[in-house]
Image (cartoon, rainbow over all chains, first blue to last red; front, side, top):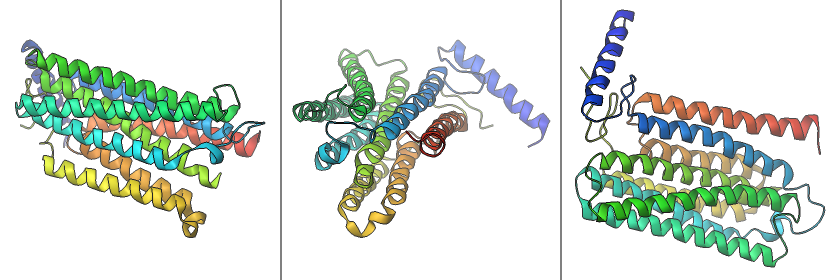
Length: 215
Length: 108
């Protein structure tokens, strides 16, 4: 595409964006919705947060001077089941999004509720795991493994908890009939957050739990 | 001209139709199979020597499937892909450089 043509496309996008903004949208000059772009920017910045927490765990988990080690304490079968639950909640939220995009409110409410329940189940598994670890003598300040493990998985769990609250907020908003305007976009933005929480867990499950067998 | 914006559906320029629920179900099935494969590899002595690269590949495929199909990057505007890749590359750079620093240059 020539430079002039590209400039034309850019002008066309900006004009369309301006037109859309008059219709109530929030479009940038790139032709994408600013709320969706904002969520992607948040996700990109969260990659840095979780990257630093994961590398902190990888550096410090085996520098313990006492207390349980990862090999002694991590419960792989239970965590595999909780990973499966979180992956399936990603599946249910795309079905919720598909439902609201085709105007099927009943399907949307069913699948968004299933997703929220999946998130709650995952949090239940995490509470069970943390409680078990504390009973086995691993606390936040026991050793560097405990500190870096609880910080990483706790930060992720907090993200899941925020996501569950957001899911229930969307569910009850829809029940009251409040998801009429821009409803699909609101759910799409939320779904991006939820999938991000899922992909971060994919990385944590591998680096923290599965790598423990060779560390 | 493809530079159209559908304000009410949230579809923007460069965006294509999203996959069907059937495709989503297939992806979910593949994700379950890959997780099961990871779990089996964890307990297999035979693959212990190549376990780390194997797990990285398996989780990389899972990551890519979720990002491409569930997060719709395969179908959405390329701007979103670029934004994510910047974050992922810097995050991966932080992990690799810190690991190199603490394991090679200054072992604890």
